[in-house]
Amino acid sequence: MRPSPLLTLALGLAVRSVIGEQADLRWPNDVLLRERKVAGILAQSEGDVVIAGIGVNVSQQRFPDDLDTPATSLALEGIVTTREEFLTNLVPAIERHTALSAEEIRRAIDEPVNAIVDAVKSTLDKCPPELSGDIMDRGIVLTGGGALLRGLDERLRHETGMPIH
Image 1 (cartoon, rainbow, N blue to C red):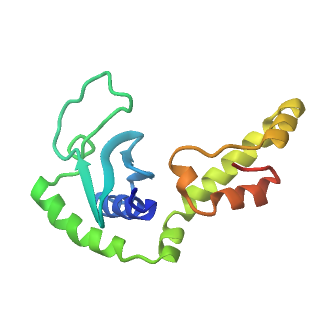
Image 2: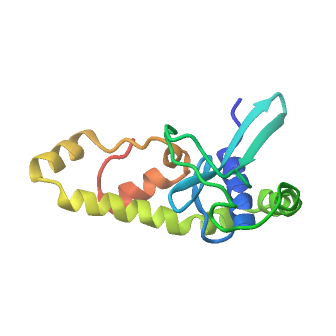
């Protein structure tokens, strides 16, 4: 059994709230600073318990060059904290964010969802007619974390008039 995608989102929002507004949540499990990964979140269910792991690069000064996603740390970004201080701030943030209602979470991710919708519409506007016809016939397939957003398919269908899978 997989944990609720909203739990992973709430944990990501908690991490972002401790780091600050400059952090970019790439749901379902990454937190970025200046397009570099500073934190990652994993969660899985074991029976009726969810086990979550949150990894934050607090004070690392170097990272391997061959990472799929470039990494950074709070220290490299000029955010001065210790692991203990970060954890002390993270625990109450997790409590606050896991108590959010679905509507509060929707409001929290409204801006990134609007950006997704705008990017899809802009891309469709630039498509040659033959490609637009193919997309209209076959539809758009949502993948990755965005595919887990309840209602995104309906919103894209409404905004674009295209079939969404």
